[in-house]
Image (cartoon, rainbow, N blue to C red; front, top):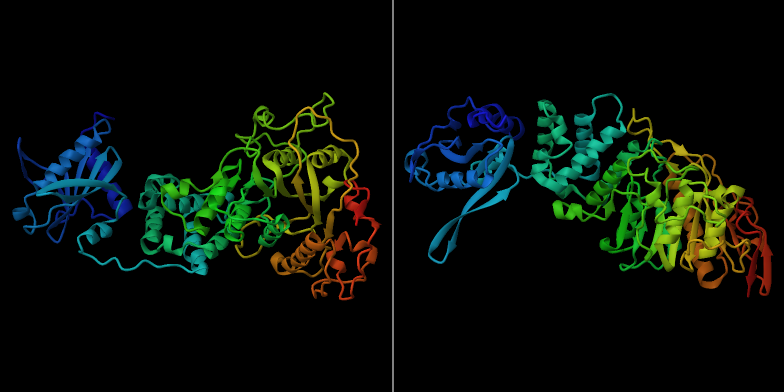
Amino acid sequence: MNNRPEISYLVQNVLPLLTEQFDFPRQESEQAVKIDEIPIPMASGVKKPDVVYYHDDLPVLLLEAKRQDKSELAALNQAMDYATRYPVTKYSNGVVKPKLIIVSIGRQLNWYRRWVELVGDEAIDRTEKIDPLSYNEVLAEYGLVDLGKKQVLTATEFRSELISDLVAIYKKEQVVSPEVVRNVSEQLLAWLCWGDNYSSHEPYISLDGEHERQAQLRGIYKNIDVVGSLGPDAARVFRQFVLRAFQGQYNQYLTEPSIISFMYKLVGGVTPNTTVLDFECGSGGYITAAVDTFGVDLANVRGVDVNELPYLIAKTYLAIFFKQSGREAIESLPIHNTNGLYRQGNDWDVVIGNPAGGSKYDETEPKRHDVKEVLQNLQADLDNNGRDDSFSEYNFSIQQAVQSAKIGGKICLILPEGLFANSRDEILRKYITKYCKVLAIVSLPRGVFRRGTNTRSQNSGASSSNQKMSILLAQKTSEVVSGTALDNQLNQEYPVFLAQIAEQTGRGNDVETWLEPLLSVVAEQWQSWQQTGVLVDMPILKTLKTKPTTPQNTSLLVEASELSQEPKPEAPKPKVETSINKGLEGLFKKFKVDD
């Protein structure tokens, strides 16, 4: 292939590429494309550049083509000689020389801008490497065309005029599959990272040969100010779209913003200097909320996901939300594609998230098969009985959360409610209570975690998980020591805040509408409990079915469905014992409150 003459590369590869991808004139246009035609006097004699593009008899771009085995630098120096010696009197207007240069090595196009720098009394020709330009953008460099102002999109337009158009390009079947979501996410991220050079990266290069789709894609970026359209509203629209990627295949469900915000309120005390880890970050909701809602410095957060699709989605989501563009900015976004169960350090202020769950650790993913590497960080035998435990997702996730938090750090996870009662999970309950102080458990209603729909209708909503889940808040009290026996008793001599949000009937599909007010009630109760040890009086919420409360239970147990306008009696002073939610009895047999 390297023996092919340079003119063959030029005619068969380079010029068609410029026409198809960058809207340059076709090589048949003799007025616009001068191939081996312009004679330029050189020290060694008259030579001709491979191609010069013209517009209205002005040379606007010079192209020098070389085979794949040739030097780019040597080709650039040759092109610079042509440009600086260009015969403007005969082949221009007496002034204009080409200031844009393409050096092609095989099919690789390298774009340069030439300018003259004054150093003392000397004028020195300089070059800088630039992103690829469309032909209209080339003409705009000379003031020959007015490109006009690109459109800045509203959030609604971001979906209808950008995301939907990208979907149309990458969707080859009726459904919007996870693969389409991947391509749309990767395409947005590639443009934000590489700018106009996105055409040299995936997924654009996978459209090789599909000239109509490529032209459609170039048209989108030609007319839309993508960077100017970024922001939180656009990111939320993007996140709604990516629900399609989570069709149960990764055992991941998107967590509603109100739940994420509520969990940070439970944690409390979050500042810009707080360090936050989500080691199974999915689409990046917890990381974004830490920075945007609670003011954590972006440098102090870390999101990790083992699957490439959630990683791409999370990275794109953060880029859109925080208006990030350029290679350095995109690469510095704190989302990492690796196994979150590998060691992530042990000094995090907050470890938070909705970890992927399951009774068995999934070893099918390429980066998940190395259980040995996971066990370099986590323990195989928690109870130190000489036999390996069952390697479940929740076993490893709970261990990782406890391992990663610093002493005094907060752990806030969404876990199955059965974990607090099932006999098979007793070892995990002992593990938690050995190394942590349990601060709160909040039971959530069913159906509040959504996954992807079948995607035939983009507005039809999403299916949800019917599993009963609870939020655990704990504070790490001691470092984990491998090989140490776990305590046999689970009873604790300190109060724990418990709340249960009851099931709601006729609630509708918009989870946020009815769930957020209920979480706000519990958050206010939690804050009062933290400050005074007493629950506050709350008004009846119209979305709730209410019934009288049991006074002796209100000091420890908040039933969100049992809030009343009736004044609650003052909490008894000496000691109170109270029963707890049946589903949580496996963790604490009873609570003892000291004055």
